[in-house]
Image (cartoon, rainbow, N blue to C red; front, side, top):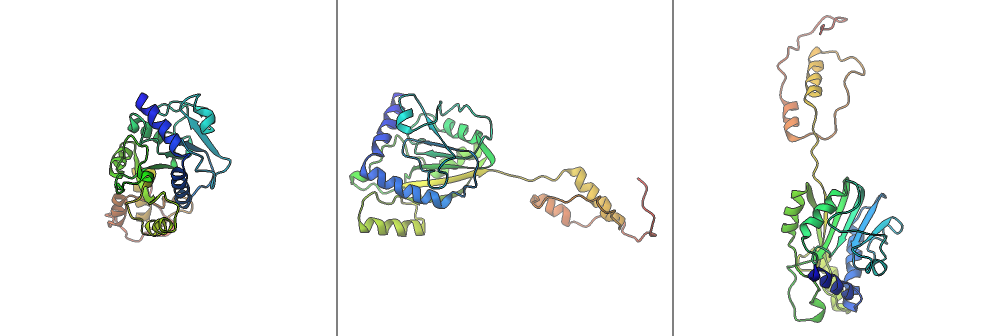
Length: 266
């Protein structure tokens, strides 16, 4: 726990430096491009200034781990990140900003964040990219206890029934010069995985299932030749591949014409 507190304290101090502010600005620009915010509840877990202000200025709920950090983080509530005081699927958008890089048991934090994310919501994870070249410059030294690969995050997300929707990279350089701006523009345009930060967007894994009874009833009505109006309910627009294959198979029922005005008695 002491290592976590030291890492979080170092992270807070880093965002107050010119390099940290430059990285925060570039992450904010990339996040605004990725987020398709349409309202609803939003939770932000971050040791820096709010990244949700550009797209959700008045709907973001800020979190803090302790009373000491609440005024510094401008938090709305205090809780353990591994035991959030909210119901399942409570938030439409959850944002975790570099905390998985410096807390103990990050997979527990991720599992709890997935629990409170709605089925139609999005979970955004921002972390330090382990593939970034280690140049001997001061602005390259990020205060991180660990650097998580996206494939490791993908495995953790799959365990909690989430999947990665998209991954983008930013903060190729924290310097303030024309060369750094050019490198940032080209790197984000090509989405080169050598940046200082990555942003992962995750969503719930979905599978639409058609009840077997409704599918059989649909076949029986088709075999009658005449379908009474209002009997056949609209089918879902999205079907699994297995159901599509079954629907394409020819039916074995008789399709011989029947006298008009008579229907089969069930």
